[in-house]
Length: 615
Image 1 (spheres, helix red, strand yellow):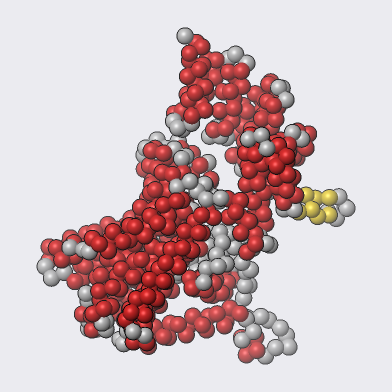
Image 2 (cartoon, rainbow, N blue to C red):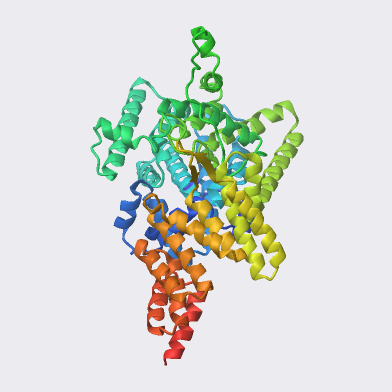
């Protein structure tokens, strides 16, 4: 244990500096996509009473991640800097966990026999540095809610590192110590994100590749892995209060959406995995929200085609053959180069939950590569420290490694700079995925916000230009179709309508804004309560600007009745009550807001003034 704890502090310092260099400027990056529904608009977070049962009922298999968000809120409310600091610290700790895994692996007798002294000295640091600096990991760090991916990876890797140390330990006390922490980190991983359920198989992979075994040990390892998987499944089903042996439960809990069949999802993932691999080596087309086509089948059916012709006609089949080729390379290197075999096998193992037969609504997201990328990084690092010195001399190899690290750091820094500006980020997204309507909608939303800021700063002409552009973008997201009777049917998402309303309101075109609100509220039964509340708040805001205070108050109270957690409705109602002289009631609403969000400076200032008036 003492030998393990006696780490290279210089190497850890290098990891810390690298992390700060590429992520230190992201503290002001705003909320994106699921950050709103999972954190900012989630009453479980901002109205948390401090009990684990609330979080358990909301997301039992992600309770650790949501607990971290709830604790973040207690300290920082909705100030994004605090969330980013935690994410960056987690990413650094993941880097150290990766270092620990490699440190353990190179100390196994099998790896030592297959590595040069140079490889043994530098491989842990190179792997950890590439992991820390790689631009494909930005989503798991800068995209706040994807802390779930990085935190899950932290516990997964920490458990793997402890497992390796337990196997390397000579004394029973040391072994017991590492086993306890291995189990603890595994449990934390399982309750952070579901993609960690492959961890027992990762233990078996390490055992088979890096430790000598006989038939009895192999059989024992297989039994333990099988029992572990069964225990994980029982744990999952019991978390949802389900019967773990029910076929119906198995069918329900092993899919996130019913709109994509299992075969179509699997066929699509064969290509998605190659997209992930290509992004790992060349991330120029990396973006936040992909528009990825669904591959319906492995085989295209055509009555004139022979079965063999159909077999080789599908892109998914060719993609699958490519994956099988990589896996065969891993098998070939099983005894020759265990790190090569481990890297390839681990990559596919870590993708097994999210890229197999468990359908997920969004078929591709870059944060899903955070855990599996360890495999590719080990493979590439092995090439750098073992093969490159044989192909080139040592000095050239060192130069290549340094240049590679600088390039990765530069790309990550620049990409993070883009994440700080939502307009720039979403403009880049629609360049990469112009057919994805959500990207256009969100760009329109941020242009509306930019227009509001310009108007507040007095740049009226520029504000109008930006808002007109946003309206054009948002209206292009509205789908118009003709019904059978010839009437026009208009389909739009609540987000499109809300952003159009804000744009029209900012331009002072109140009639157009109210028309969109009325049309949206006619679909009240199709709207979620918090969306209804948003329309009513905007309606109240327009009436407030028109000084129709009675109607504004009615809209705000309706919004609170529909969705009591709408903070804007409460703030705006408090402001209206204070303007109309009802100070006592205004103070009541302001105090409610301060109880939830103590950092709201506007409400704190208004509350102090009202209390001063009452003295």
